[in-house]
Length: 83
Ligand SMILES: [Zn+2]
Image (cartoon, rainbow, N blue to C red; front, side, top):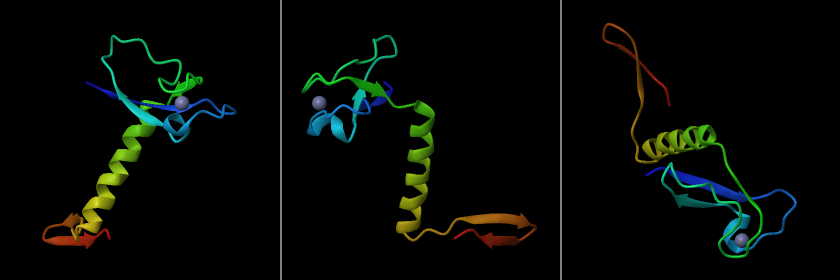
C-alpha cells in the first residue's frame, strides 16, 4: 500500500505528531486525511513527486555512506567516478 506524508497546514501550530510531518499507509481508495489524528489540526498531503525525489537522493546518500562508488560508463572500458 502506498505511504502518504502529511504535514500540518502552514500557520497552524499542530502538535508534536504533525508539526514535522508524519507518514500514513493508506489504500488508494481511502479518503485523504484532513486532520491530525492526535490533535485534530488541519493537515495537508505532501506531493508524491517530492517524496520520490527525496527517497531517491536518500538512497544515493546511503550508497555513498556505505562506501560504494557510483561509476558512470563513458565508453568501452572507460568509467568516470561520479563521486
Ligand atoms: Zn497534531
